[in-house]
Length: 223
Figure 1 (tube, rainbow, N blue to C red):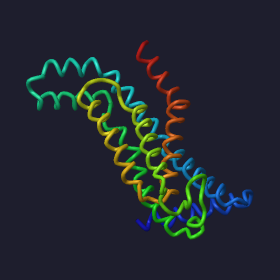
Figure 2: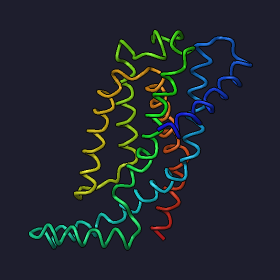
Figure 3: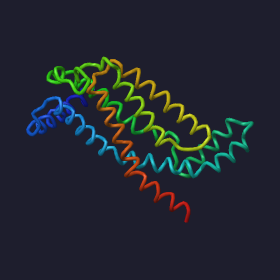
């Protein structure tokens, strides 16, 4: 993990040096550090988010065909799964595409844990009700918010429909959101704040930017 921790530490410290040139309040400065850091990471993985949305649209387009397959092979689950995989491959849809951004960000979350762990200055700085950004939120408000924002983001990107893959992804979204709440109980508040800001940016991207792509793709399907 050092291959990520060291460059991210340098990167984060660089952002902090820039911010503190203009902001003297350390509480606000560290919040801006985390916000800027998160915004840059989300911009880097934006192409994955776009691909994820396109795949979700393709999954919605396949719903009628998936229902036909479910009816046709309702007594043969193995054959149904094979035919569904063939359909996904032919259409370019990926029912698990919603996991890609999470898989990319997961090593960053772990690396951020160690980055913030070794930032001595952050240990003595709070933010709003948080006593220390370098320690866990003793009110547990941040972990709950992380779970709620994770769930909302998952609902927005999950493919619609009642096929097994869509149902599985919705269940996974719920389970992962609960997992984040529990896991973040003892994570530094700065790391949890990173995740919450990341989710909010993702939601805004989905609503304001990615939906434009969605409307264009849906318009093509109607032609």
